[in-house]
Amino acid sequence: NVFRHQRLSVEKKTEVCAVPSWSPVGAKANGVPRETIRTDRFIVRAAYTVGTREFSVQIIIYDTPPETYIGTYQKDTTIEEEYSAGGICHYIVGNNETISAMWVNGNVEGHIQGELTLEELQKMIDSIYEE
Image (cartoon, rainbow, N blue to C red):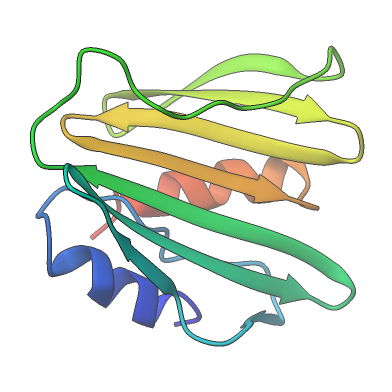
């Protein structure tokens, strides 16, 4: 599984499902996930490619759920929808030639962004909750 290393990094800090298990055919990890430790959170970010396309998955695990989440995400008006999976609302937005999904599940904030199709992104989101 292309997400194996990122999934292992996240599982060290939380039992909350956060990392996809499905990836587009031919997806490859660009190195190992980058782990960042802050005073109140643990961040695991990884970059991937599918041919010439790029995308990333970032998971932020807070020590305690914050009153305000830190993620700031850019968007335009090309796509803007809510997508439900695993009982969690995911916000899908477009930004120039990329697409992003953002969500919060307890003390976990997730973000997938890149050169993906809407169908690929939705399959990735669905795969987070399939075990």
